[in-house]
Amino acid sequence: MIGDNVKKFRKKKGLTQDSLARKADIPYTIFIKLEPNIVKRTSVQMDAKIAKELEVNMEELIK
Image 1 (cartoon, one colour):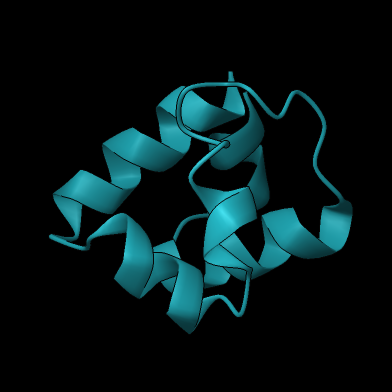
Image 2 (cartoon, one colour; image 1 turned 60 degrees about the vertical axis):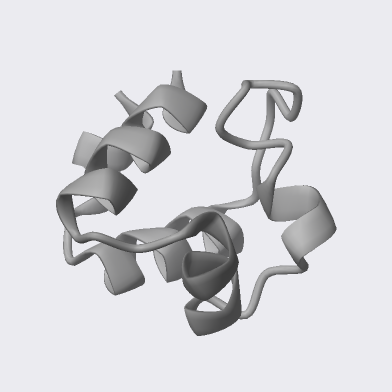
């Protein structure tokens, strides 16, 4: 799920949840629900912002 991938790539980059949320311009309260897969669906725009900050392509992020 996307939350697992976000966490994996975020940790590889040495980022905290807060720092990635800020860099991707995503509200922290929404972002913290991503990694435990509480949020099941995300927008393409949100996926693109996260992928850009993690320097991965969207396919890697959402698979």
